[in-house]
Image 1 (cartoon, rainbow, N blue to C red):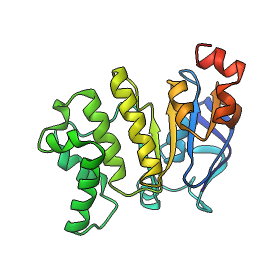
Image 2 (cartoon, helix red, strand yellow):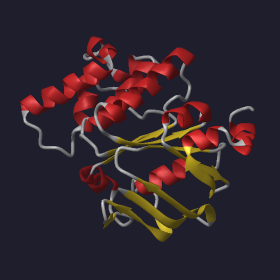
Image 3 (cartoon, rainbow, N blue to C red):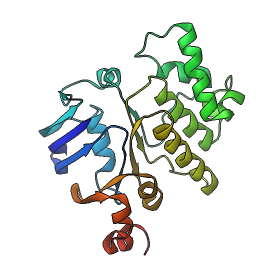
Length: 236
């Protein structure tokens, strides 16, 4: 479904990714773990067209997208839920959800159906539907960011640090929602997380990034038993 082939990415003259390659198959959950500054968010933003790869290619469903603008990539079926949520604080929950569907020409009935799916996933959004997004709690804003991403009915959805700043009980809720998105809605998922144990636990395969390099990859259940991964990322 998605192939990232040997990409190099720079911020000005500073290289952030070095020959990174990953592959994502349909209906998989892929986790990408690593410490701060490892290049995880840079990789997500490059897939999304927000950064340019100086070398290498990115293919989605057999089509090169590394020269495609971000809004067009959304139209092709990839959505990015960024770190820090980045909801529209001065707009209501409903208006934020409507913005998530900007790439679609939904009928009113289709829009209402997508809204209902969001409320089914996170009932609290229905309770807050007319509330300004900026006045909601961090957990509620994360629910909104995830639901806004789903409004365009993506084939692949990428989550960047979805547990950041959330209370433990809400972290569990977020990960349960991501599993539902994959299993029930049949969405392919990439999750970038510092909460490595949670990310690996719900994923099929995992890539480990360190200083802009993929240093390890494999089946998640195997990496959970890996001594180096345990020591470096799981507190073992």
